Length: 451
Image 1 (cartoon, rainbow, N blue to C red):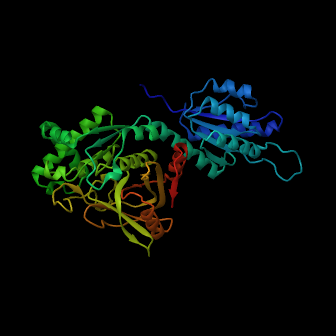
Image 2 (image 1 turned 135 degrees about the vertical axis):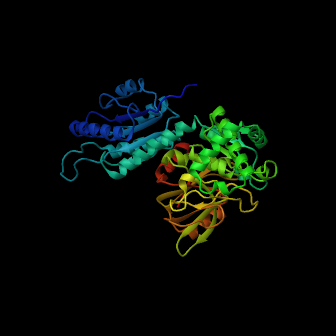
Image 3 (image 1 turned 30 degrees about the vertical axis):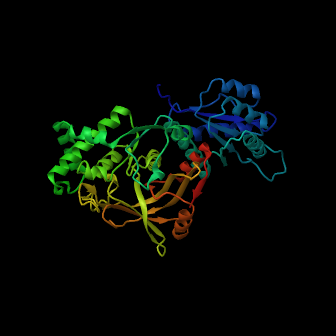
């Protein structure tokens, strides 16, 4: 099925009995603000304000929205929102209230948008429809930020409906938190799950053509520091595995994957998959290890919102005095996340002493987000969102690491998340994506644990 372009419909609803010059001015300013937040052709705009149910329905006949931005251009009773929800019950909604343009002059109420918001909110609740809400003028910084995040979250929701996520092999014993059911991923997130045994990728790597192996090796040499120190047979087998994974990804249109790693790639293949996943992450394919499907989805969302690979790691060290939490893993981080003074160094696995693995501390990032698509024991989902800053720190342990100074209390967060049963894998997102993730959780009707 051919994927259609994203469409957001702007619905400025109200009644014609209010101060229409004020409303018209805000109508035009709102269009300008929304056009600045969307790409050309993404915003569907009516030719005039929708000041009757007939005008609303006539415009709704012309749109195929992926997002509904419902604005009370003046007061609108609950019938407007009822009609919108009846027509598009499954489309995410943003409700936008305008401020009164003149207050305190003792004159007429010009818009009464806020009272209309209560009517709309009451109707949305009656329909059981979660929604994103913002109040402000089209030029207010907070309003623009919230609208932008809501639009980007709706784009992610649409993109997930076209995402194929591959699970390569099974989670190791004791790592069942990363397992996923295809029906759950599809019904909750719209993501299709493709499963394959790790041995199939190993088999294909062993049969990789030498020309493809040498091409992958040359590419890796260009972005990794010290790969030549890895024994020749491991370098060759690593490059063959790169070819195998890339061929699989391209053939099956995979956008994210969760790969089994230990013990198979050490015992059955003789070379780890760590650096292969690093290269996939840099190529735009979110790749987690230990077959953690929800970890891969968390990484994919971070990548979608920032355009950069996310770091996949365990929380391994808490420093309450400096309010930091260190995230670490064996060596799968994207080369582009490495500190610039060291580059993406290559070494060997900390436990198995076989390479290549990635060995570096990540570069700094002023605005970062710790994120996890979590799953409760009862099968329901939730989001963890914690804001912070990735500090300028060298590699903390063998493998790759990121030291995050949290905006909230790191000690309290660790204690509470352990007690609440959160998983041990997280995506460290290099960029400010907190509002987008929160909006996406709203669209999916999922609770958020935010720090």
